[in-house]
Every structure is written in C-alpha cells, then in structure tokens.
Image (cartoon, rainbow, N blue to C red):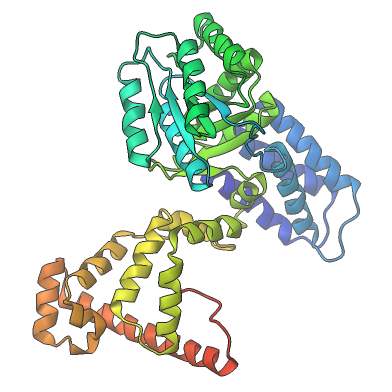
Length: 443
C-alpha cells in the first residue's frame, strides 16, 4: 500500500531539494508530478484538484521559513495537505455515558465485516472494555457460526438467536442482555449483501431507529479502490456514518481509497486492518500515515507496537543480565520472538525515519530469522546458556537438527559474540553513570 505513491513523491521532492530557490514554474512542475502520482494511486479527480490547489496556494502565498530550504518547505506543505485530506486528527470512538455503548458494523459481503467486528472487539477488550458481539447477519450462510468461532478465539461472548429471527429483534434483546450482564460495549455485526439495495438499507435504518447506536461504522475493502469510496458515500447518505474501517491496507492496493474517503463522504477513517490476525487492527492516524507516505517514518506507531509486543518483566530481567554481562542465546531467542509479534519485519523497518524509501530494493528475508530461531532451538539448555562449549561435534549435531550448515552456526556464534561484547560495554557505561539502560536490545 502506498509504495508507488511514495516513490513518485520521493522523486519529485528529490529534484526540489537541490534548488537554492523555487520559481512559480518550479512549483507548477512539481505539482503536476504530484497530481499525476495521486491519480495513479487511484485518488479521485475532485480530491486531487482540491489537494493540488491547496498546496499551490501555500507554496506561492507564504514566506519561506529561514530554517528550511524551498524544497523542504514544499514537502511540508504536501505533508500538511495530506494530513488535512485524511481528516487532520485521529478520530476516536464515542462512548455512551450510560452503558452499553452500541456500535453498528455495516458493510457488503467480502469486505471483512464480520472479522473486523471481532478485531474491534479484541481491540476494545485490550483497552479495558467489556464488549459483546451480536450476530444479526442472518442471510449469509455460516455468518453466525463464523462470529461465534471468532468470539471464542478472543474470549468475547456472542449473542445470537439463530438465522430465522428478525435482526431488529436480535439487536434489541442483545442490548438488554448486555445491560443486565455488565457488558459496556455492544458490537452488532449487521447483515450484508453482494451489492447495495433498498431492502438492505431499509433493514439497517430500522435497526438504527431501534437501537439508537452511538457509532455506525462501515467496513470497506481497500483493494476495491474508488468503489470503496462510492460504497461509503451511499451508506453515509442512507445511515449517517460516524466512521469507516478500511481492511487490507497491508495489501498491494494503490491507496487512493484511504486518501479519498474522508473528503468524499465526510466520515472519518477510524481503523485500518493491516493483516489477517485478529490483533491486526490499528487506529488510523492521518499524521502518521502522511509520514509513511512521504518516507518520514512512523516512530510513534513503532513504539506502540513495541510496547504491545514486549514483556516488561522479561525486559527488566534482560537489563539485569546486561549489567552483569550474562547475556545468552535464550535472551537472543526471546527478543527475536517478541519482535516477530510486532508484524512483518519490512513494515517495521519502514517506520524508522529515513529507511522507508531505501527499502524498496532491499531484500528483507524473514526466513533468516526463522533459521536463527531453529538453530538456537536445536541447542541444549546448557549450550544456549554457554555457547563457548559448542565444539565441532556439537555444532554438527545442531546443524543436522536445524537443517543448516556448520558455517551458519559459526556465523551466528561470531555475530552473537560481537553483540555480547558491545552490550557488555554499554552495560559497564550504565553502571558507571548509575542510570537505567535507555534501550532494549536491537535484534
């Protein structure tokens, strides 16, 4: 997602950075390229026109900051316009002062509505809420069973009355049960269709009138491009959406829907699906997404992912080992496994400022991490604690057990010895200064 757009914009800004001053012709030429890049990314034409006009007005109508070159200034204007285009600030869920908060989750078949309902329930559970899922998609075969399976996986109860009951009645009874059972959020997985029709909209309007939801979220598939925007517009006109959830943002779609949906519908993009796992749902932050698009990284999201994946008790134990210079291969294995929980390595590296555009042709082979894990897991507990006891015969045994060569074992041991020496030096520095170590291991 957004890779092609990032490359095109990066090439435009690279040319601008070499200029000592910018003329109006320079700005017009750059914005023509920006316009072309946005159109190729499947951003709708009215949105592109408004975006380019806004950037041009800023670039030609304001004094340049003395601390910035003209090229940097244009990048700033494009970033600011991108943030504004996507909503300005992160749009959060509204919660009722009198629980339960009712959230209607709508969408067409195939967009990921039911799975997104479960992802959102897991997200709310992690935030300290007590959600309940409600199965009112009584038309799609196995939709109720799918929601029940997902509910069991995340430990969230699912209310259902079968496939022969009216969705409005199911919703009403579910809210009453949630109120009696102390559930503070009700997520209603509404019925979908293959396409928008009057019967679907009438049913959703009846549900809305009955349950008076605090949020009406529409789930759309980013892979459908501008069709997703048109679907969002039609649902918004019929129901008055409070937000959009966009799925498959980790795919190879061009990204135009994510950039267009707020401008076209007025409904903010609140969550994005970034993978198949039920934990792969993120709140949408326009400023962070603009940073990713422009290759500026996304440090805040990286920190949040690290905090979710890292075990604080293990981190404290690791710090003590560093101070005592007792780092072993078990620690290396633990850290690698926690980093893998954060998501695909290439996506994590893109969040580091300065690395985004440089990763285009860089092969990030995650199988190497799995190979290192296999090598360590093929060692005995004693060998992991003290790699120095690994003689030739032991290395051959580990190589056979992990499906690797002895040369792979030697390479890992050499890299680990270097790393341990470096970490010992940092630990000594921390002891002399009497301070906590301000980092976790970078592997």
